[in-house]
Amino acid sequence: TPKDAPIMTYCTGGIRCVKVGAYLTQELGFTNVSRLAGGIIAYDRTLNEKCDGEESMFKGTNFVFDGRLGRQITEDALANCVTCGAETSLVSNCRNHNCHQRIVQCEACRTSY
Image (cartoon, rainbow, N blue to C red; front, side, top):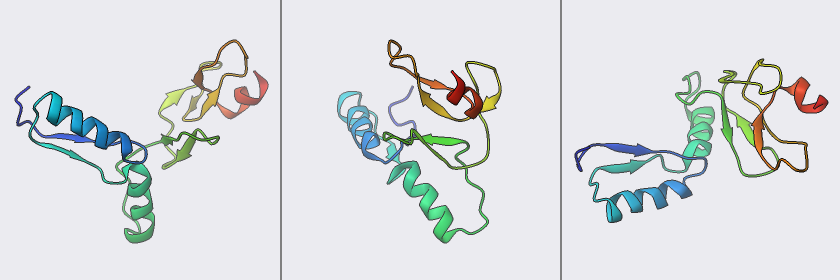
């Protein structure tokens, strides 16, 4: 990849993109690195407040690092439940205490298994 190739980064809230951008430029020598300021959270807020009717380019659920685990941006279901195979975008903490993983699980399986 040429060092002047355009690279656009995005993340949940923007902080990781700052770190990745610094690594790409300072450690790897890329010269055309940009980021989505404020991340997907700010992008979604801007669309909802200022761009009435404009369709989001981000589809599905944005993973967040709190008890919610995800914030739905659009109705698109971009994954399949690991238990039953149904389309979903929900992320759950595995309920098996020996598991300690985040998994994609539909609402029905999330409460049953």
